[in-house]
Length: 109
Ligand SMILES: [Zn+2]
Figure (tube, helix red, strand yellow):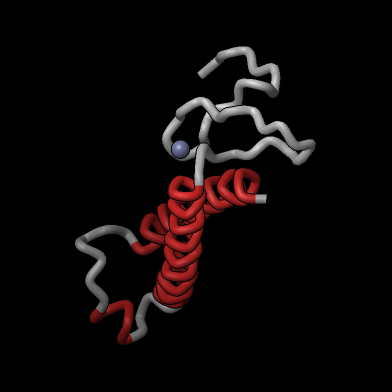
């Protein structure tokens, strides 16, 4: 990246191809065509699904951190990782996913 963008030579948010400037007065598109736009919408759905899964995992990780003597904490397999570390990683992942979700939403609006 790092190219100067004058707004006329936008690049497709999905494949990076230059987007032909439209003759009409509509806002410039973020995608070169319908296929890339659909791919963008699909990526958005996947990101939302990943965030939902992350929320679920955070809930159970938090339960284990808060109740270290619970059955879940004892039976749960964190692959030897410290429960707090598992939770921290999930929070970090959530922030990354939310950032990616935001930029996808910007490109689709
Ligand atoms: Zn494209």
